[in-house]
Length: 595
Figure 1 (tube, rainbow, N blue to C red):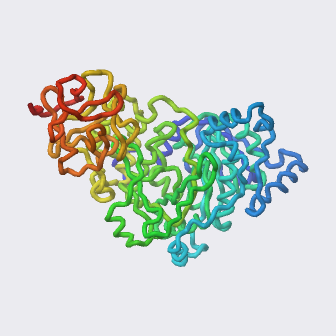
Figure 2 (cartoon, rainbow, N blue to C red):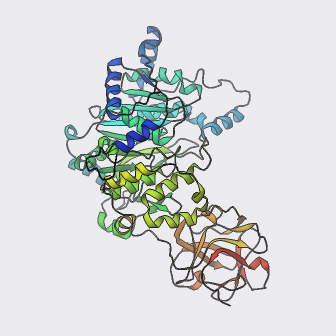
Figure 3 (cartoon, one colour):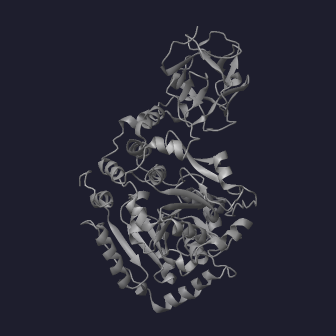
């Protein structure tokens, strides 16, 4: 498969990666085996069946007729929001815990949201219409439903709370036009929970072939699991969703309309939060010119960041809150894409592990290789943002994935990534030759083009600096200046144990402005707003509280001659004493400091 072969199959790199990946799969369908044969043919055509893939069909008649009749009778009410249906918790929850509060805490720890509350929230609840007035009016401009592409929904999950998972499925069925919904693919990435086993299969019986359950016997990660789901999808558009969402009325039509008009448009919906404690929807409908309007950005350590709309995008939209937002990147949990285009563009980088950086990788690839990435403010799918992740992954997955992204897509800008994330230099990222070849075959543009044309607001680190790296205190040599988890204003900066990982402890002193910028967002600088408070502030380039001078003994002085110090927790400035507590050792110094 040479790079000079203009007739090479654009799917070759995906085929190669999947065929080299050893994954065992069990497929469960609630429909009859004829559908399975069609899916198997699709898999064979795409070349995705490896020698050790095992497929098992579990038919819907594995339970007795009376059991199935009872289940169908109960679950049919799911499609009537006025008739609340709760999950039958028999066999998966303790009905009489000895200590209820401790039991609730245990359940919370398992899922990192209030499982007790979720289990008592109707599976078929409906949410209010989240569309603005202009969004409702814009519906008249959509292509007719008969001309919209059909859609497949792909959920992937690992040890998911059953009530949340079933509610996600029901919300999609209840809010998607039936003539457009081809199937819902659930990909179980090797769950261990009892409730994700036979019990899940029993709950899915009512859906009669609309829902397909694909099981991985070994943990494969988001990238492979979603690609597995896309393999089995039969709709013209595939919508990737997290397994803890609830769709709202009218979510599908604005998304499918955009893709019908341009198959290379990738669409993310508006994503409000479902409170992880009380499971109430955090309503954010404001009928203002820029309702729901945010866009995706990133920091140079390859972390996704939500950003306010720049002035150019506000002007382009002209105060119309129904107009799509052109977004440089996406969060990655929820988006829709023409299924064929997904594979033509290279699907996911299957050399990445578990999850992380895949959202930025596919975002850059969409824009640089001829596609368009949008956030559609007229489409709303709510999401449970967990307190934190309830599962762990392999060590250094983050650095490996980000390094693969940097080496394939960032061109000369990858230097900034390595400055901020020095441990990544020594991480084995695996073979990227097939991804490099994919980029060549797709004739993608440069990362500089992306910055100039798609994200001109992105702050590019200066290559002309006085010093950069960690700022180690000379009095407490194992402690460095750290953002303490606060990466935007008005977070206070302080000291933390030096970790050598860059990120929150990587700083850059600009030679032209004498500003000290933080790595996780170069838009923000150290700002001496008060003598006892050093905060992050938007970099303004006008000196004042953001002007710093590094001298030959490591003191960092303000424009008024005060020295940067600390109170053992937070940074401050005070009269210079010559103390080691007011002196700092930078990782790298490139010009002679002032005396």
